[in-house]
Image (cartoon, rainbow, N blue to C red; front, side, top):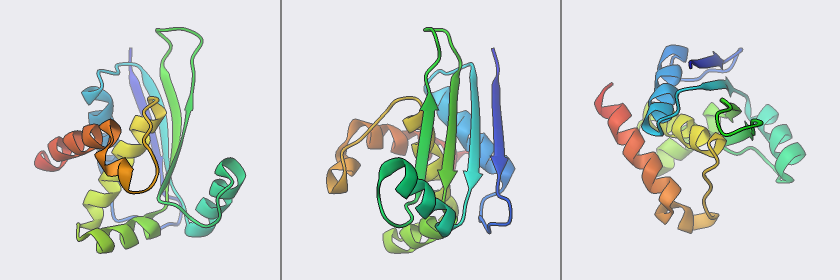
Length: 147
């Protein structure tokens, strides 16, 4: 059993190192007791995120994070997923919520990882009261405390 995580930023200014993004994803997987996984985390421009959002979710504009989990063929199949994060949207969210950009980016890595694992939340304001959001914030608190 192993965990493989690939982080790609291309030419996008991120504000979080690839090593830190990987460590956050590993912490989220460990917090969920996942021991066999393959994840890719890609930081993309707002334009690329808007294209992904339109193509896969039917929404206009860029969003902060989109995740795709790929179901295995059995209970013991590895977790496999792709996470796309738009750092510019994360920066705007961080400013709006009064949190450091690195914290917001870490939050999105955890959030995306939980979506890959099958967690979901309601839209709008109710999402911050959902079980997924509470789980995310517990994992994030542990990650930020160990930084």
